[in-house]
Length: 174
Length: 200
Image 1 (spheres, each protein chain N blue to C red):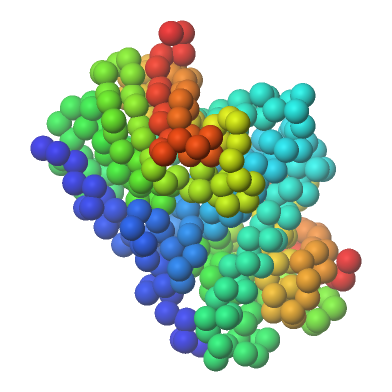
Image 2 (spheres, chains in turn brown, green):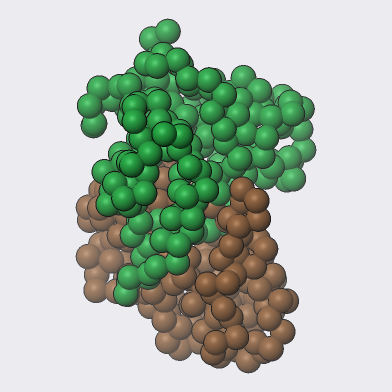
């Protein structure tokens, strides 16, 4: 699939950074992990939920916008490819949609920005910590299967922040 | 020599198109990611809302501190990087130039049209932005507010001064603190950040 020309889509609109016209910000692992830690420590479960929902909503909007622009990308397979290409090209990591159905999915991430960042700043943690990627996956699948926001629940069963080999995500209907 | 902002922006944009095999963007000595400004805005502003009126001040402090600590570590990494050495360092003749270099990188990262309004060496830094992603995002989602909302830029402004005029890394963080005296969400025409020594 080479319809999506990533290098041309990442651009500037004056002082703003845009991908396909949508405003983006570049941030490094220090900020992303600091935000995660602040929310987890201050609000607990509610903070985790906020991280998840924010990623879900913003990825839902971003992908919706992209699929509207790239009308030739129609099949589920090519939409999943485009989503993982976006994940990788945004520096978020590598994601593999290994087994995906409309009502459930099994997804793996062999490396990602938040894992690299967390381990660099804080080392191993005891609980799964890829809340951003969980939300990102939920938003992606809701757009791809044309479901409303909040339709899917994504659980992380294994996490590299715990030193598991891969991050493994299971998706089911809420 | 003046800092050439467009040269720095060009270097960041070109560098941000390079990926290593793990899908990470290693640039200017840090791991960069690109994500929608809506994500960061929702996270910050909904965090503030969830903390409620009683903990509003605490929420602001936490968000500013998270950004200041990040800005301190991030721009330390940036200043130590190969890319800084190649692109920015040849234009830097003194400490004030370093601040201009940091601001150019922040603009390149898409944080807003930041510009240096005033620098008093070792004492004060004033930055202005007529369009930061935080103020724009707040206005779009919630409309006008009674208090300033650019928490990330408040933290980062102080971090620039910490790095240049604070104790040597890693002991200089929080030597400076920022007040956002003007903010577009309050109806001002631009956001203004004034960093001074924390004890002042």
